Image (cartoon, rainbow, N blue to C red; front, side, top):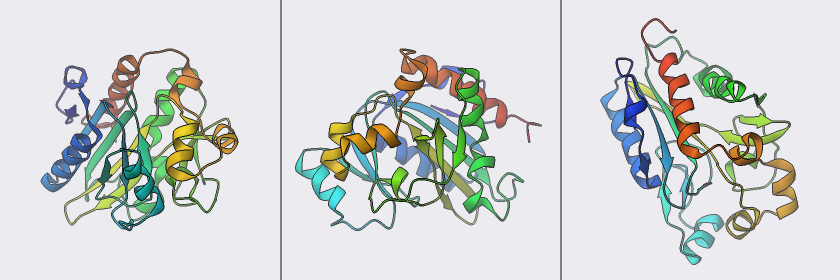
Length: 228
């Protein structure tokens, strides 16, 4: 699951629960060393940003229907994780030139590997400002930037900066479930279909394991010595 600039990377892929993945991110960030991880998520969970209130409506709804809630150390609002989703993370020392003073708005620079990953699959994508709605769903909240395909959001990113390093991470949903997004975030299914998309929709039936390997290969090249 985790690679460093000296690793080949592909043999370390794992399928993990969302809570385990988020815990691994926190451990990597505490180390302050350059690292990257990609994994396939095994179960459902609602992950929420560090400042999200415990009584937020999406948290209450998720717990009501039995979806575990996991709190990230990064910012942002709620993201729904499901089996087959691909999580990715970059951990960069503060001195790394990729971080820069503008790190909090540098989604395009820090997420360029995601654009190349999709491009290698024949899918054109770009980091853009999100649709701004009064929503607890992170990709429609108007915060930060989102990765879009044909004007629909397929992913986002969140960050945590410490005195040692920056954690920049996100998730690419494999399957879009409008009914579940409605249950958790009160999003109308028609809005979900118009505004969001998934790996399954943009690349067809390529299995998550193959997609995760491809993404890990791209991000491994980005974090190898001499890549910056």
